[in-house]
Image (cartoon, rainbow, N blue to C red; front, top):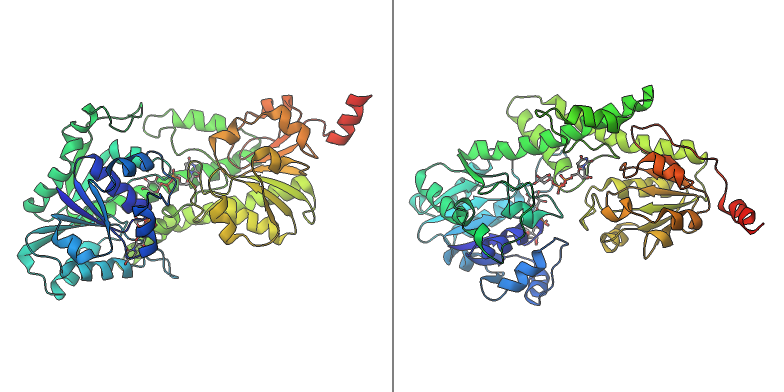
Length: 468
Ligand code: UDX
Ligand code: UDX
């Protein structure tokens, strides 16, 4: 199939590259000329596993880049809208980019097209897209609008695209359904998985994936409901972690006991400093807003949001309770991205905590494997950036782990112990077994588990003892 993908951001770029790997001819459209030039030159503006390989494999062959949306629409059988849907002040989704793209698409509708909303949009958006395209002169029989929400997690987006739990397609008639079935045919037929150069299969993958065909409104709701449920699951276990702290229980043990119930499952049950990213926070507020507009006051979502905010404030209080005072303290911060495996700092709890620590007068020395460049654009004074975790920890009054990067879960603790000024670790992502930290001479504080304390011998005193 010939497919246009509008918006070469986190979602659009992955979608276009994966469609090309399925065998389709793809035009990636963007209104940011700088971005198009960078992409044509082989640059990959986002940190996604396998994305570089796919773009290198298909750039100039099955993937073209263009700034002319009308021409791309005319040349395609399907046009995927993957532009940003950022939150407005009031929390609902700003759909102005979607509208301006829909308006432009209408000028290219000659011969039957399916216009597909890939961006996360509130229910009814597909109807609005249809209205806009009609108002701008396209003939009703020449196009249909479909909803095809993405369930891509950042850091694993390419794998999530090729090995999805399900593909959701919302359509209003069989003609549009047929086009969507053809587009995803390489996956639903299993053909793709037999190819030698297919993206590696994750062990838990079920192939071929189910294609679930629904109405457009149901597909739009599936996306919001999925993200809201996942965010609720995280806030739920964070609330349970706070109760564990009050009663002296261990939330990891509670997670094991609760997560082994097959109806609940162990995934997305990791307590920490809360969720961030460009999706959960905004999708939760957008879902609440669109529910309210349609007469349902989804107050539960407000509580999910409140618990998430509170989780970060609780962690800051924990740091204060361990250090007594903040002013002038040197803190090593491991992690700035909103989660491990990505360079994205949008709504990152780690970044928000660093800003609060700076406001309290701390000196922060931060390290993140991928997100430091983006963080430098946001963090101004008072932050040093280190070349690795150990450089960040040098002379630190305490080490804070704020992002669940795998490398932060496998630090050389002996080496770390020798570098810090005081052997204190506050872990916002529960990456370590407290007993292991105590064995290595650290006092270790985490989320939802009792503090694990060693005799806090400052490194200077330790060195003197060792020399003696
Ligand atoms: C965004 C949201 O984050 C995600 O929740 C939603 O599902 C899809 O849209 P993302 O890829 O992160 O995903 O958006 P962003 O990184 O902002 O990329 C949007 C791209 O669209 C940018 O490259 C921008 O230049 C381009 N764009 C935006 C257009 O080409 N035309 C426009 O009118 C507006
Ligand atoms: C999410 C959804 O998972 C994905 O399906 C949707 O398409 C986009 O939004 P993403 O935001 O990229 O994906 O990352 P995700 O892995 O879901 O993590 C979101 C946030 O939750 C991160 O800040 C992460 O640190 C946090 N998280 C995740 C937890 O705090 N605990 C968990 O158990 C899981």
